[in-house]
Image 1 (cartoon, rainbow, N blue to C red):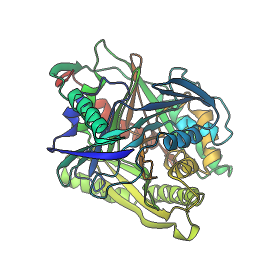
Image 2 (cartoon, helix red, strand yellow):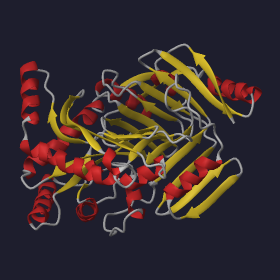
Image 3 (cartoon, helix red, strand yellow):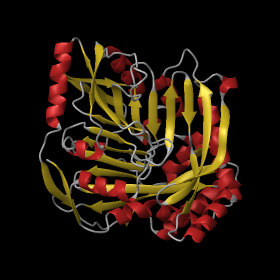
Image 4 (tube, rainbow, N blue to C red):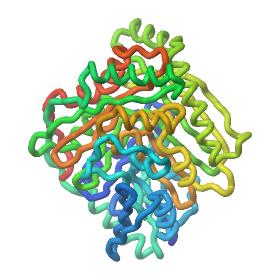
Length: 464
């Protein structure tokens, strides 16, 4: 196939995606926080040639020829299918970096197929572990240059024009009013139970089992009738914009993310990961906000937490990168987001010639910032202490191109809609000097912006 490019007038991608938000496997990778250094590009994907779903080691591939089922490694199946679909692998330098290929989410529980793990936490049989579409058309947005393109893979110009007309016609859906309402959240932890779980982790640290583990609580709510997940997403991206946000429609399952954290980026042979550890709430009062920043920057506990995860990620990157190339470019640098301040580090490396983007992803999965150190023991303790499997939470959302480029987030600050219910999880890294009460409050700080985005009923004008 060849790639054909149609340049279009620049537009805000959010209302455009509203026209596609009811389409199965419509995906919006949304750089919603335009003030952030990493929020240059957004992408709209729809009408995949093929979809790949995985659940407990069973992989289902669906395309125009029917369904095929495999057992084994979902990452290996993805590698095979991405190669077989025969999209143009050459990227055009003057366009956004995703010009077709694989996009979707990788759930935290894919880690069970990478490492041997106990099975203690309750499984959700209605939740899949991975959902990927293989897209031969992508609408890319360059917000810095205020440009927009529709990139289409086709055998010839006639086929390309037909595909482009189909995509653009779908963007002409008339606007309609739709709404969301307030919901009532219930956690799978009481405050006392969460604090006791934090203390259990501290006991493991004192015993020498681990240095750090991430512990989260999950909040769930029943949705009212006619609740529109995308209408709510539009409100969330206004009140809590994030550089690695996104929305995905998987029919019964929908995912809406306001993630601030990049997991893995691969351009050429250059690998980058940007773990977040250390959080402080923002304040509308300028003096209080500066004080909050200073306290976070000077927090020995938060800096130690971040540094441990940086060491873990350096080890993970060494599985796929040339060892001398792995360096820490920034350590515990403060970054401010819409509702919180974070300490963010940047680790880079050079991918070995015998490794692919999917090898890199598998070797680092799930991300160290949401597991702990050592990773495998931390994951075993998470399995012991968290009542439910994590599902998409703490996995990754993003894209992989046929030529091997990749960009993925860490799925935190993320809503998962499933058959009339919605869930959101929030957690934090527990270290030796963690205070259980403070750790509980930190989870609320992280979830508060999402709770507030549901706090009132709102009607949106979006497309049908």
